[in-house]
Amino acid sequence: MDSIHKQMPALVSFLPVYVLCIGITFALLRFSSSVDSFIFQSLGRTGISQLTTVPRFPISAIICLPFALYAARTILWNLMSRYEISMSGIRLLAGSLTRREVFYPSSVFRFKEIFFKQNVLEAPFGVGTLILRPERGGSNIVVKGVKKIKSVVQVLRSGNGLE
Image 1 (tube, rainbow, N blue to C red):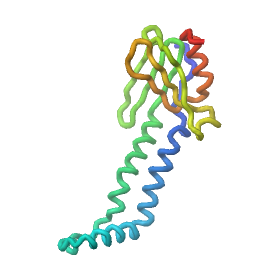
Image 2: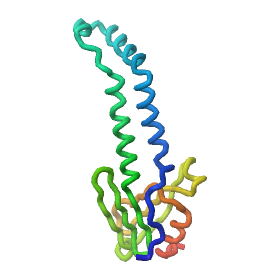
Image 3: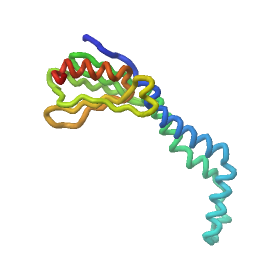
Image 4: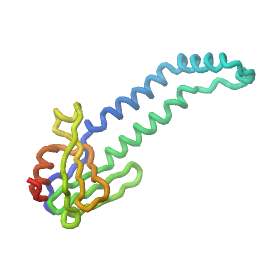
């Protein structure tokens, strides 16, 4: 296979998710006593008489659990995923706990549009999200965290007859 790029997705593309989820988890755990006391005071104002019989659960730890799990899942997905972009097609090997391979051969999948998106963090590093819109309907093929995105798009456009 005549590989143009065979890499794992760039870490910088997922940085906002990591910072947000890990930051919320850290803040909830760090200030758990304040958060828990605020929640129990708020519940006490409702006038529920059974509130005094309920043991004081670490509510902030329970609230931070989804954020921590989502961050862990995203990190695992980032570490286990690979993409290979070539003139013969696009191969995606992705997953967090289990991997799945998807291959889009260029002989079958002709694209009417090939473009990319970048956010403020990705632009200085030349990283972006590759978006391929097939000619014959179907959903877009989205590859996040592609390094050297401008050159990849240019090569794919020339190979697809779009330039």
